[in-house]
Amino acid sequence: MLCNSKYFRNNIGILAVLYLAVILAIMFFADIGWANRLWGFMRGVPLYDKFGHFFLVGILALLVDAGLKFRTFRFSGLNYRLGSICVFVFVLLEECSQFFFSTRDCSSGDLLADIAGIFVFAFLLPSLFSTPKQEKQS
Image 1 (cartoon, rainbow, N blue to C red):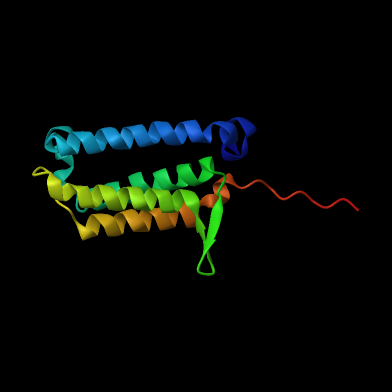
Image 2 (tube, rainbow, N blue to C red; image 1 turned 120 degrees about the horizontal axis):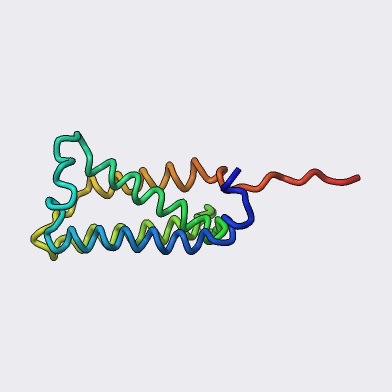
């Protein structure tokens, strides 16, 4: 599988940074009011904005987690993935920053779609990046 190739695992961090750059560009265009010009044609698709948040943020969480080799930390007796927490903090701050832009609207629905994407992509799909367990030699 491509995801298990050594080349892919060694370069996943670069892919995560490039993907983040795309998301930052999307945010920039939304902040300056170009959202309707770029993806206004999707207005007819029900919940297109929520699906966009779900997939964009979910894929980002998966890539960042994979780039950090699914590193975890323990807090209050629970294990958390470092990459997923970083992405969550990033989208939370980004969603709150929308209060300061007249072209944006802060939405709890968008944040819920972000959280759902992080959960599905970072917690339910990480098996794509796992390496097969080696059998013990006796």
